[in-house]
Image 1 (cartoon, rainbow, N blue to C red):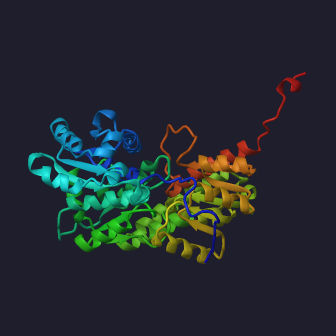
Image 2 (cartoon, one colour):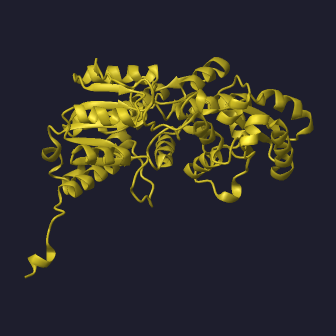
Image 3 (cartoon, rainbow, N blue to C red):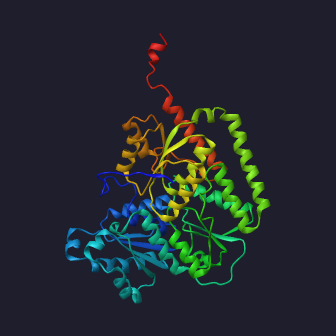
Length: 447
């Protein structure tokens, strides 16, 4: 078990670090090709949608986005006609097969009937209209991703015949790795080595045709532990595609990667091939660390660390930091809050025999309070945690996750054996910078 952190004066979020439902819905739609999106909102919400396309690295010329640009008068008097006009114009301009019509907070305030409006317009519109209600009042980014994924179920066709040794990869974007698509590539390369074919990635550069055939896969792999469980449950009930590897942390660090790969090998009956992959990966990590990081364990041993991340990265890091770097996880702060990830973390802590302070669904205020009120030597998180740590007086903070201040030119996976080395390189460099003197008087030195 763990000690659940309690916060006073925190009935309302002081400083949310997780965006709104629109952000989550947009992150799903941005990963589907051949579609357009209409946002019924003030113009500011268009920036949220643009950020989702940025995250998927979709070129500006391939984005088909329209915004009703609601003003004060629209909120007071209503804007149904404005939305109808934009849908018809976008249909003629974009010529996509599918158009997502997304209601935001403003549409909720007006009381706009998005579904009814789409139903009444459909006979005059070439694109299939998909109404989605994604106002921030309805939840955060994680809720929005689940809303967006549920809308994709409409496109998946019934197919009773499964293709052996195939998987769907679900929610690769549900991660705070700044280059999450590198984790997706690691998984694709790993599956290819093991002779497992990827049927459909939902959603990343996914065509509607690929989406239709997702029911042919023999299993689903969820690449996030923050979102996607509801979608995978529906996939199993509607299309008999089971979610595998759902009860263990994702492959972060040596132990977790080996555990995850062995479970994968057991499911597909390819244990020998998996053991070969594990041997190669562990040799890679050990050889590099032996040559270039001889002080790695003495440096980090007994360092009291706080983990502030999403469940996808945060849960996997616990075993890596404790078992492999001999740090002591004192505080674990998880951005999302779902029963599945809570159970996984509980099992991990029980297995490791540690009892840190833990909180789920945290905001910025709670992070700062947790760091202030606990005896912490270092923090692994994003640039937010780094700034908070500096203000509190914690000297050492690792800026590893989104949003990060790092310039990122080369994609870095955090999952698998290369991923562990990538995380260790960031930790190692941040450690050196933290303890490097900033007060050297160079002029005095050369006198």
